[in-house]
Length: 157
Image (cartoon, rainbow, N blue to C red):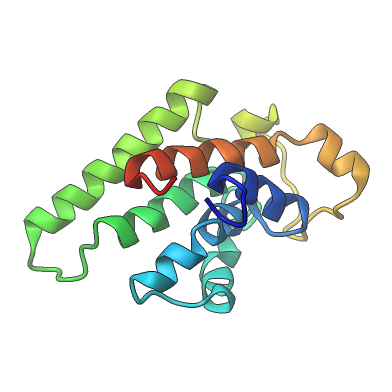
């Protein structure tokens, strides 16, 4: 819990304040990440910046799933490339997160979650964050779901 908010509530709040979906999920855990010696919020936000909009707004893997993948790296690190067991544990956790997200939402693909055509070619520029934008996007709720999946796994509540 962060400031009397669940991680899910915090992730949704971060998205609704202008962060992208990946940043929102990861930054909801920034205090925990700092407690294990990880980067500060500014560097986390920079690290996650390209994963919004399904990776650079290409509408591929949802940024919330990318955020969970980054969190898996902090939870079950595999920094030593020769440690196959650590890499296997990390990959298993990534798959567990993705499988649960897919079970809840039906997909891990941004365009599917937004109901967009696979043929749609959007500009790289992010959309303006207007009240209309937030009304038609499920992203705040998807951020909350992803943060809840991670939180339940590491039992931070």
